[in-house]
Image 1 (tube, rainbow, N blue to C red):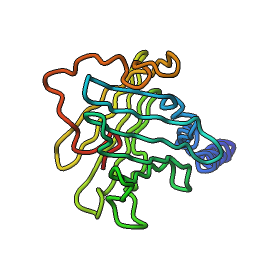
Image 2 (image 1 turned 180 degrees about the vertical axis):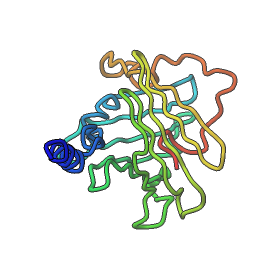
Image 3 (image 1 turned 30 degrees about the horizontal axis):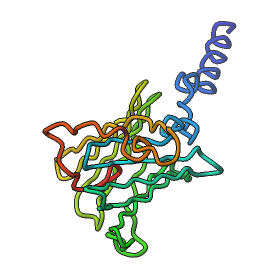
Length: 196
């Protein structure tokens, strides 16, 4: 009788506290986890400038801007935001030309949910503009650089930014990141660092 009671009590405890309840789910990523993006980042050559700026998070969002200039003329401008939403973190992107004419339809930015995150890495993925295919945007930070990779239609484009060093008003380095020659393989990007 005593062994039946002990067995019944043991079974009741197992049912009440399943083994899976002992392993808590990992916490949902927050904007604080993406703080590594914040800063002023540049990738430049004598004739090209790729520049990305991310604010610190405030409230439920952080905002960014990316621009690409060639021969002193702006070619592409992106506005980016990452917001905390019910389903998790979401990156939204809008592309503009030099006259601020949007490339995407009104009311339809590129919307990319966060799908993977580690300490200094974030990957967002979702439908491309107009729903034509999939686009993935990833950011990876190391000690001296921020790497942004955009993949769409099976093709990847990589941007490697370094921190902007402000050397005062009027400094050529301030705007052109030192004017070091571009690698021979560098070609103007088809879209921006967040480009979708």
